Amino acid sequence: VILPPTFEVGTFHEDYKIDNTLGKGYFALVSRAVPKKSGVPVAVKIITKSRCVRKPKMLPSIIQEISILMSLEAHPCIMKIEKVYNEPDFIYLVLELVEHGELFDYITKSKLDEEKTRFIFWQLFDSINFLHKKGIVHRDLKPENILLANMDTLHIKLIDFGLAKEQQAGEKLVTQCGTPTYVAPEVLKHSSTRAYGKECDLWSLGVMLYICLSGYPPFDAEAVGPPSMEEQIVNGIYSFDHSPWENISSEAKKLIRGLLTVDPDNRFTIHQAMNSPWMLMDIEGLKRRI
Ligand code: ADP
Ligand code: MG
Image (tube, rainbow, N blue to C red):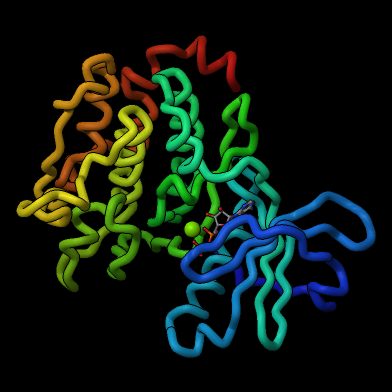
């Protein structure tokens, strides 16, 4: 059950001192902050209310993000929210600080081998399973929204519930959202008659798995001429033809094929992904990392 958010009484600046900037999203600025009295540093996501005036759907989506984060029980791979200040000009989300940057930056610097990738996806599948069981669809899974909690162990935290939605039993979601590279075909094609559900998260996981193992995305935005990226996505046009794939296991490719299945009804479910031969291939290796 998702409850409405509760807000702090005082002001953010009475309680915290802002430090360096951690990241910028589409809607928000995120900085490190330290409590004035004592205690552990946090991350603060600052939302400027005047920007919401021009985008009438934004405020409800921020409330939704806060409500979902506040309603979730603790999960080791999901960022926690500590509190929220609702002030006249700004909303401050006080968040668990995740110190080691975006998975996006990490994978552009160092390519991941299958063992490391498996551990990251084991954590991702476990978090998505946790969310889906509660009826929550994340809808914005991409490497910018996955942070590294520890560079050496590769423990991760899932962040950014700005597009997340609680799906009532039998309800299908209809808003078109997400980032083109990671967006599922049914979300792109969507019209009022074609709604979509939690399967869209599994597609995004498939795109990320492809990127982590090869270093490049399955669907090419810079394609010269047709098919356009949208056409590639809705028709599931991608390949394992280039050199990085020569040394990648057939089990990994099978999992990617299962996740990048255009028809959401035939796509791997989170249960199939968690129990795929690739995931189960090296249980001992996983246990050592957990
Ligand atoms: P948006 O909804 O605008 O995309 P995000 O919640 O994704 O905003 O935050 C934007 C960026 O800020 C992230 O990609 C990340 O780099 C950084 N960030 C967000 N939350 C945290 C956190 N808890 N700890 C450290 N950095 C964070
Ligand atoms: Mg984001």
